[in-house]
Length: 239
Image (tube, helix red, strand yellow):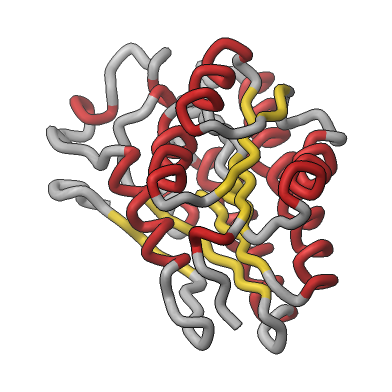
């Protein structure tokens, strides 16, 4: 039986900015109870206060964080129904100048840590025969372009695991969805010399709130409906 959103409990990783923060705010409006995660203590406390939500501070690459998040949901609300696997980073660049250390750190966040979150909650949801894993992937998890192959590879990894788990869980009440945004205006590109909205000529990129609405759209479907993948692109994004 489908759980009403207002009766559900969600965990959101990377909830201090961008898509994670927008999703937390959208969930709060819909009365979804939450456990929020982030590594910036000041920002995490702010969004936690705004949404009246308990929080777990820590670097997502800490292997203990996924279990702590699940335990927090059980301790505060005695259940967990949704995880929004959102924490992530990006490192791109041409062969001659790309920072390999930053690439490897990105892999730890986007793949290793994301896999830990996915498997931790998949095991729990399979045990309760209910739950929805929402992975914030990217259009770059379906395509590649020069200088961004490593980033695409991390998102391809999430897409591959999600599809395998969808098949494995297809006879259960556990759902898994990849949200695949095109360019979104977030802090992800804050250190770039030229913002992609300028270099890629996309004057009106998606907003985090656009993606949060799509997350809710996926969660609002009837319990016989599955949405394995949902791609959202801004106007002018020629990819």
